[in-house]
Image 1 (cartoon, rainbow, N blue to C red):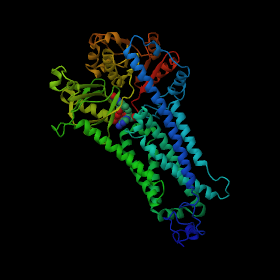
Image 2: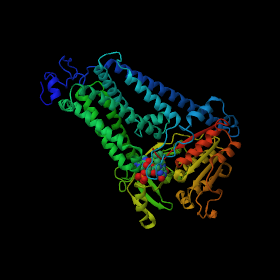
Image 3: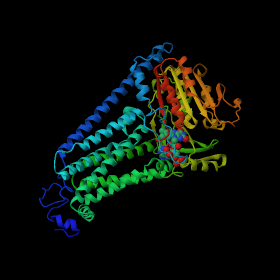
Image 4: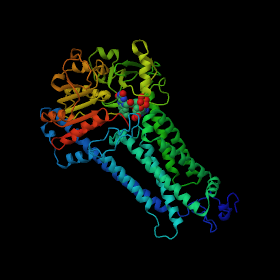
Length: 614
Ligand SMILES: Cc1cc2nc3c(=O)[nH]c(=O)nc-3n(C[C@H](O)[C@H](O)[C@H](O)COP(=O)(O)OP(=O)(O)OC[C@H]3O[C@@H](n4cnc5c(N)ncnc54)[C@H](O)[C@@H]3O)c2cc1C
C-alpha cells in the first residue's frame, strides 16, 4: 500500500502502475476510474469522432458547392457583361425569389436587427467586441449542440455512476484534442480554407474564438470527471498523489492551467485594450498548451497522439510559409544585387502615416488585398495587417522605352514595385510610428521594414455593372485599389463596370492628404467621366473646405452620409448586377449593410464587407 495520503493508503494497490493505462484493472483499485482506460469507451469515442468529421465534411461540401456555384455564375456574368457592356439588364434582376430572401434573412443578416460590426462598448476604453452574424451563429450553435450531444451519449442505464463519469472523461478529452486542431488552424492567416472557400480570415478568427470556448468547456468536463471519481474514494491529497505518480497528469495539468489563463486573457475588453501584449502572451500560453497536451497523450501512448502531431505540423507549416513569403517579397534580389525592401514612413495630418515599401520584386496582390507589416524598430514582436492602397510597378528601363515587337516582349518583366499603405494612429504601434515619423526632418522616417502577403483580395468586382464603394475614414485604403482597377478594366474591356461610385465619409478635410496624388491620378484616368463618381461626405462641423484644392470632378457634400439614400438612388439607374462594398467603422458598415438588406429583393445586389478588426 502507498503511504502518502490517508485516502490513497486505504485504497491504492501499489502493484498497479498508474502509467500503464493498458494494464488490466485490479479489483482492489478503487481509483481505477481515475486513471487508465477503465470506463472509457474507445470504440464509441472513435465512432462519434467519425460522425463529427463526416458532418464537418458535409458542411464543407455544401459551402464548397455554394462557392463554386457563385464563382461560376460570376465568371459567366463577367464574360457576358464585359464583352457586351450595353446589354447587362438581365443581370440587374433577381432570377430566383428564394436567393435574395436568403441573402436578406441569413447570409447578410446580423444576429439581431442591424448591429453586426459596431462594437459593444461599456466605455471608450472597455469594449466587448462585436456580435456574430446570423449565419455564423447558426453554424456555431449547431457545432456546440453536436459536441454537447456527443458528450452526453453515455451509459445512462448503468447503476455504476463512476463508470458513467469515466466514460464522460474519455469522451470530453477526446473531443477537446480533436477540436484543438480546427481551433489552431482557424487562427492562422495561411489557413488554406480561407482561399478555398473565399471566406475571410476575420470569419475564421471568430470561429477560432468560439471553438476555443468549446475546447475549454470540454477540458473542464474532462477534469471535473476525473476529480469526481478521485474525490469519491479519496481526498485532495489523494488526487495530488495520483498526479505525482504519472508525468502524463502533470503535463495535462500544465496544459489545463495554460488554457484557463488563455480563456481569461482573451476576454474581449482585455484583448482589445492591450492587443499586442495579448498576442505575445497568447502565443506563449498556446505553446504551453500544445506541449502539455502532447506529453499528456504521449506518456500514456493514447491513440489521439497523432492529432497532436497534426497540430504541431500545421503550426510549423504556417511559420515556414510566413518566413518564405517575407523572404520572397523583401529580399528577392539578395543573391543578385543584395537588395532588400526600403521603407519610408511619412507622417500625415489627421494622425496617420503613409508607408511606402520599395520592393525588389513586382507585386502580385489583387485589389482589396492586405499585407502584414513588420517594423522591428517600432514593434519587435508583432506584425500588423494593413490594406494595400496603391501599387506602383517600376518597369525595367528597357521595357518602358520600347514597344513590344515579339511575343517575348509581352511577358511581364516589371522589375520592382512600390506598395503604399495608409496607417491611422491608434494607441499602440501605430501611435508610436506616427510619433516617431512626426519628429523626423520633413516628417519622413526611413527604416527597415518588410511586408508579408498578399492576403485576401479574393472578392473580384469585375463582373458587376454597378459598383458602390463606401469608405469610412481610413477604410479608403481598401476601396481605392478597386476604383483604379475597375476604371482600367472598363477602358480595356476586361471588367463589366459601367458605373462606379466611391463614397468617402470623412470627419475633416485634412484627411484628404492621406490619399496624396492617388485621387488626382484616378480623376485623370481615361473614361473616368463616363464611369466614376466620387462623393465626399465631410461630417465635421468646423472643417473648412477649399474645393478648389480638390481634383476636378469630386463632389463634396456636408454632413453624414445616409447609405440608404445613396443606394436607393443608384438602384434607379442600376446597370447590370450591383455590388455594394463597405470598409469603415463598425456603425458605418452596419448602416450600409442595413441599407443593402432592405433592397436585395428588389434588384440583384450583392454585399461585401471588409472589417479592420478581429
Ligand atoms: C485586414 C485588415 C486591414 C487593415 N487595414 C488597415 C489600413 O489600411 N489602415 C489602418 O489604419 N488600419 C488598418 N487595419 C487596422 C490595423 O491593423 C490596426 O489598427 C492596427 O493593427 C492597430 O495597431 P496598434 O498597435 O496601434 O493597435 P492598438 O491601438 O493597440 O489596438 C487597436 C485595435 O487594433 C487591433 N489590432 C492591434 N494590433 C493588431 C494586430 N497585430 N493584428 C490585428 N489587429 C490588431 C485590435 O483589434 C485592437 O483592439 C486593418 C486591419 C485588418 C484586420
